[in-house]
Image 1: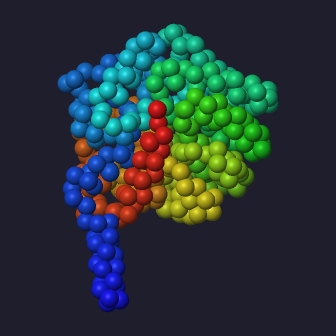
Image 2: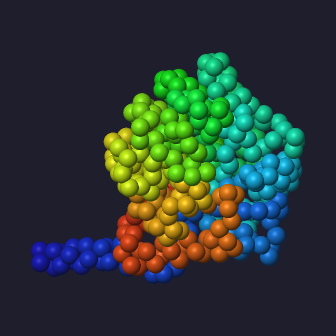
Image 3: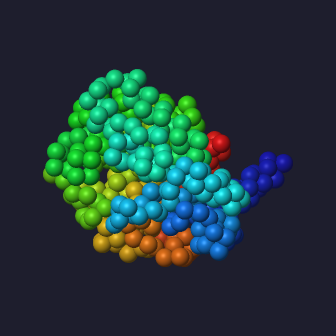
Length: 370
């Protein structure tokens, strides 16, 4: 009897191991499709559009919305007015068989995709202005305006707050854009908590950014390679450590900043040492890890599509963002991503366990979406 029991246990173990690595193609591709968020052109969903096809065939995990192209501040990309945007989001959700991340960068202040001149009322103070006032209730109430607006529109993921420290006054992308609460980690932690709380109360997911810190660097990773090797301070990790420890950090967006002292080969979003070594290891973060836009020139100028995607996933990123805003990735971007990752798994360049880990985390978060 003991031999039979042992044999059953052995075969069960073998079958379990086999199931973990021998996906059928559809199962693997479905899991991979949950690892990409894309941007798109258009203010309404056309049934003959690339986006509709991606939604109907479940090739994407969600979308990211922009008001205009960075090349033309007067252009209209996805956002004309509240009524139009609300219908667009409703149509996008209806076209998908599964829950979607409907995401946006709505930090407040200068960083807003919902401009007042297009009829939106959620005009709020910048992170810097809130830090200068240094009143948690004011921060909560300003963030509440954002959360209420996002909730009404149908947006469920805000890539905010920004917890970079205001360490470099020459930084166009952080300091001068007023995206930091303070150069004091404790003040950043305090206001980020209030900001997150307001979003949580309206069921809006947040994502801390830009890990491991963009506030000390001078460059802008939208435009090219950014090296923080000689400027990075360990105190830039303090907001992440505190917010992870308290449970406030739901999701974290990883930057494309390079730091030779952490990884002498790869920028943060492609760095196993940064993500697995520090974020997941040292800081103990177990939530969703999302890349900053993979079409930023810090990535596209230095890596092929395949290199960037494989390295980001192996580094520990669960979702990769392709905004189709800085550049257009082509009508087959979602399929190209799926093919790239699928073939990488089949060729042994990405482990199936890494896909399973990402899929489990994404599914767990999506189960809580309204």
